[in-house]
Image (tube, rainbow, N blue to C red):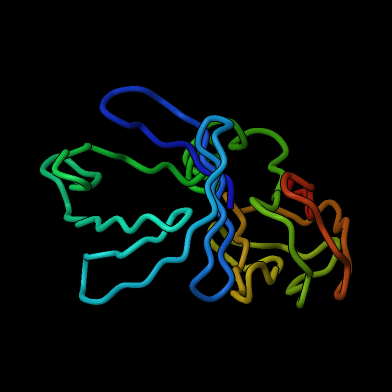
Length: 166
C-alpha cells in the first residue's frame, strides 16, 4: 500500500506490504523488514534484524497519531492516496471525467457496473483484492460509466485506471 505521511512536520513517501506477522516497509527509500505483533491494543512489538522494539500508538490531538518508540515521541499523520484523490476529485471531476484508479497492485474480483450505466456519487464500481483484503472502489461523482478498463480476474498495478466516469 502506497501512502504519504507527515512525520514531525516533514512529508515522506511510505509503502507497506504485510503477510501475516511479516511487514516490509519503505520510508523515503529506506527499506525495513520486520516481524510485528500487537500484544495489546495500540502496542506493537517489532523485531528488526534481531533487535526488539516496542511502539505505542495513540490518537493525537488535531488528528494523526503520537507514536512512542525507544523513549521518543513522534507525531505522524497518514494520508491515503485514495482518499486524497477522492477529496480532489469532487472539485476536479465535477465538470469533467473522473478516473477510478487502484492504490496498490491486486486482482479485480468484481465489476459492479457496465459501460453506459448511470452511477451516483459513492456508488461501488469495481472491487479489487489486494493483500487478501477486498476494496470497493467507488464513483467520486454522479455520472455515466464511460469505460471499464479491467475485467474480473484481471491483475492490476498501482495507479491503473480501472474505470472512467463522465
